[in-house]
Image 1 (cartoon, rainbow, N blue to C red):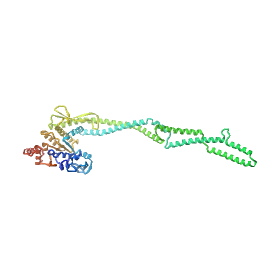
Image 2 (image 1 turned 30 degrees about the vertical axis):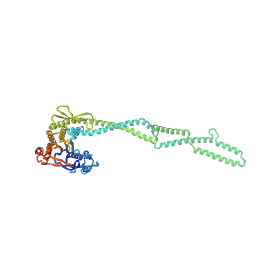
Image 3 (image 1 turned 60 degrees about the vertical axis):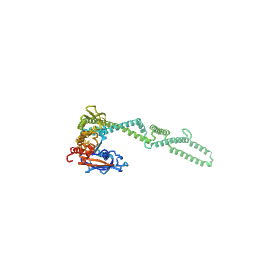
Image 4 (image 1 turned 135 degrees about the vertical axis):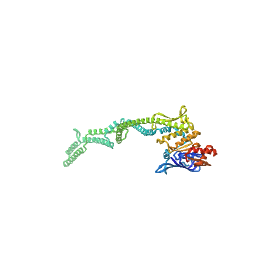
Length: 549
């Protein structure tokens, strides 16, 4: 709970120091004195919304520091927050920089602030189910937490299943003709860089056929072909004719030269035939056909797949094989995930059904508690109900919501927010907090360390105000209750009393006791310190304060 509060530059307060020692603490003062500035200070230091408009006119910065009875390494927890007119703020938790979100998270279990105009916040539909749960005990809390843990995992699993199915549909469409294409591509025995090699082989084969044709033509002209006269035969015949007509002195020399030339020519032809020996043309043409067929098949596959190169085709084969492998494996994975998700959904359904049963029991218990406290607050003819409304769809919080309603004297019930008057809302709010205090004794953890009420008793008077005060005092046995009030009968019940007083444009906050406190109670009763008002105030204090105060 909060033990000390240091306020600087908030609203009309230049500086104030409050040290809390009582369980039931009241803060009083005339209207406009600046009690709301203290409410802003409580909100500010607990991480609620801050506005630069709340900064004192004479200050460039507002700051609030709180000391809590929570131990941090053997010391009390200290939180501090400041904001400047430029909108820049700073938060500290035990001297260490923190964010506003961290300050709020740290403060939530320590303090709760209920203002006169925030009564419906507690009665809002988003809060009502949690209030019912507060009376459900450990089993309800555990069931709710298990569902809250399971539900997002179930949704995540189902989302993953949908993504796998979507991917499978997309890849199955993509792979419709892919296996057949892969078989064709594999039949080509592609390898890295093979396309350039095949083009070179094709060019070489075409050149070899062209050279073989020329070689055959030369050989035919040299040999004369089948039964024909070749070039060597004609030269030999010509040389014989030359020898026959050669003059006697030259015949021997010409014959020697001619036979030598013929021998060289024959040797040339023999050497050419040996060194230019080529495969038969039909064999070369068959090789060319094989290469052309291979290159043609490659080009066709490239057109059909829209792939530009053999290397990319090899990558495509790898992609298809990996995809087909994933499709095969994902079928088993999908079945396993569907089975797991189905089991989680069944478990979530079972938890939701159990949670509903527990909530319906808790709602009845909550109703009984609230109605009991309302009877103590002079609302005997009313009937408060916490109806559990069932929903078809299971959510992370269950499959139901809670609706708080109020009926008078057996009439039809209506939503509390529409049926109850301001004073009735005040009493319902107190009754709910008192019910939470009862549940908190069983360890529900619903009550914070301190509850701050800003004129929650507004609209009450006389006996009902007195009864509300008794309830608040009873509530203070479970947590520190700090009440800002205009009701003298309630103020007299407090174990500690602070007064907010405004002089000019300055607001002063101080603790009061004894005769000075009696004068404040008298002011609240009659607006003066008349003898009658003072006697009444003293009587209220004697009746409302514990012995020794």
